[in-house]
Length: 97
Image (cartoon, rainbow, N blue to C red; front, top):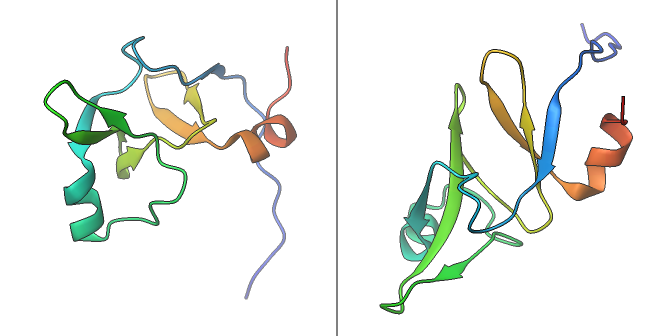
């Protein structure tokens, strides 16, 4: 049976994603992302490399690879775990301390 729950309150650090700051763990080819059908590709950050290839930045956490979308914040928890949070939800879930 479903039950209503509230997220536990804990402090995290957060930073809006910016390309070129080394916030991502790596990049995956746009073609591979689309071909594998891992996720809905709408809004993904896409970077065109010097050779013309288009790649998408990602972070890795215990749930696997998380691709970064336009406007995402990177959430840093104690212990090193990181998550992405969309700008549309960030200000409802997180408040300055």
